[in-house]
Length: 528
Picture 1 (cartoon, rainbow, N blue to C red):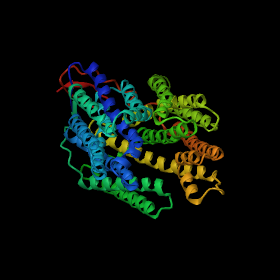
Picture 2 (cartoon, rainbow, N blue to C red; picture 1 turned 30 degrees about the horizontal axis):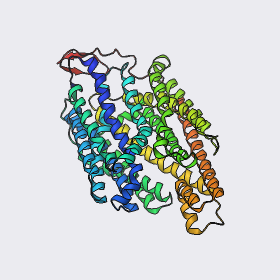
Picture 3 (tube, rainbow, N blue to C red; picture 1 turned 120 degrees about the vertical axis):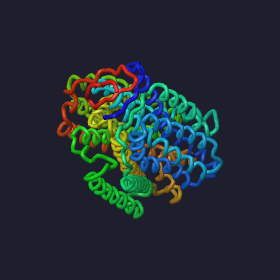
Picture 4 (cartoon, rainbow, N blue to C red; picture 1 turned 45 degrees about the vertical axis):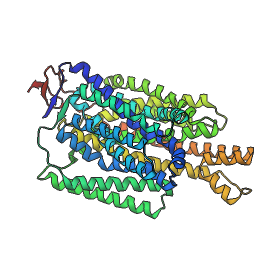
């Protein structure tokens, strides 16, 4: 049983609290997207080398991956609201430090601190939902948070482009501060406290092994994306990370026999948790096909600015809203299996349509398939996440949500590395450059934006057409790969995901009317 402190007007306050959590997740998502636009400016203003620029990105990712499970555990042990508030404060303070960093080293350190704040924000925002909502209400809350995280992808470039056009580079970090303060205030006022009533012992060995394994695996995948899958360092780090995670599982099994492990491995015996988590990760993987290629297509082929590229992704938001609103009702009528499968069908259809993109297709065609893809994301992602969350007891929902987030984080990093390799291989394969100097050819093959810039500098229209056609070929290859993944997700949903959530038949918990309640997952509330 979990002790939950709720306000008397819990019904209304719960949904306002979800809005506060969505605001917090939006800040995290925006930070991940706006930074890429600022990298060229940072290289000049802070005299940052290419290696330092990479660490400005990676420091955040690695710390987040390493601290996810400890962050969830701290919420279960000391109170999820309390840890959320601390995380928001850390995130806001770190954003301030990022904005006023005077060197690349300072910015890297500040970004690491930023990742520490995000590590608890991500899982704990989800972990409070099984405590706050009944099984009937929770899908809407999950959909609100999931849609918010995806909305950050098109909004980030729009906001970042506008800020960099009108203000100095630190503004892309400074914007986090007032939003973090607003989210902190809203969480403090609106969110009830919840924690495990048991005094959970700290699994020091589990924390150390999970943090080291996740950090090493994530770093190896990032390195593979940058230097190729044949990189000895990348392969060694991936192997070491995987080995440490195997040791972590063995440690958890040992601890579970007579103590309190960091994670409850029996969760993976649940089809809802296992396949809900896997399918949510597959959705994210498929989505990266769009996020990875479309902005470059808009800029390099259609000639849009970074700001314009963000605006052109807004049909994704429209599709997401339609799918997200429909997901809960479809799940009620047809079940989780049908809803997730329908979402994957739309995702696959949108991606296959995107593979017919040519240099002359224009934006109208892209808007159509992006909208279809968005609708599929809105159906599949919240429903798959809700299936996984359904299996979390309110007692350990913090760590359980962290496990889901960690798997999705590693899966997303793996997806970026794989899709980057597919794009580069297909792009470079269509670039025969016999009449271009070796140095210029290497630059052109490095990226489509470098190729377009080189073609403009050389004043060669045939070279520009060749670069653009090569990129569209690479983009089509990525979208085909993601369509295959989407089709695989559809099959997995149909074969393995239960039609109904395990708790669907349980009586709904009535809305609490007292300031302090004790609530058992899926059961009635009673005055403490």
